[in-house]
Amino acid sequence: ANIVTTKGNFNITVNVKDYGATGDGTTSDYAAINLAIAALPAANGHLHFPAGNYLINGGLTAFGSKTYLTISGENAILNNTHHGNTFEVQKTCQYVDIKGIKFIGDATVRASGIHIRHHASDSSVTNCSFEGCSDFALYIGHDASGAIVENFTVSNCIFGASLGDGVHVGFASDVVIDGNIFNATGDDSIAAVAESATLRPERITISNNTIVNSAWRGIIALEVFDVLITGNNIKNTAGSAILVDRYLSTT
Image 1 (cartoon, rainbow, N blue to C red):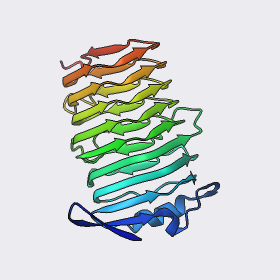
Image 2 (image 1 turned 120 degrees about the horizontal axis):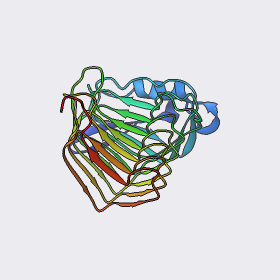
Image 3 (image 1 turned 120 degrees about the vertical axis):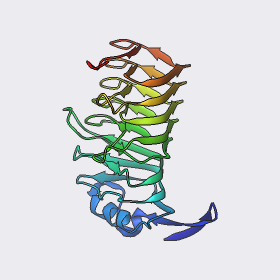
Image 4 (image 1 turned 180 degrees about the vertical axis):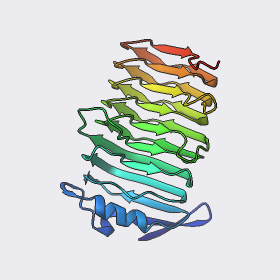
């Protein structure tokens, strides 16, 4: 592993190829990636995918309680063929940034697999691309603990060919979805939706995104407190371009 200095701390870089990942597109790499995840330090870790096509045909290990974690790729593709979640970042993590990775899958039936299921606060997903997911490409919201996700940014990503939503926001606050491209998502391109009468999104900004060919709505905000939708370019949606509404029977 390489050690570099960042923000006054030691950032331990864990290279998945050092743990047996091949990135050749045909060899199963999920066991090697699990070993790399297990090798990450509790704080200030960096999980790195060098250029390659990493076949993921089994489940990946949960990250546990990592803080100040970066997951990055250098022309790296994570090819998920098992149709489960590619990454799940737990609420017990914090400051987890994912960037520069292409997530692909070959799903043809909508199920429960999500490319990134992100529960950690003070985090971001930037400069990634997503296609072929069996459900949402990116989910931001609470986990089984029910705790809200706070302060999250999604920017400069490309979302296409998911069978569900591109970005789905559940119980989260202060989320910014800015400057992304959505092309041919299988349901809504961007959805901020309350999960119950008490688990509602708050202070959601959806700005400067390009949305084309959504199979349903371009942007939907249901039971959201304080939503700003501005500067988006939306074309050829099967349903509403933008829908902001209340839907819970208790309101």
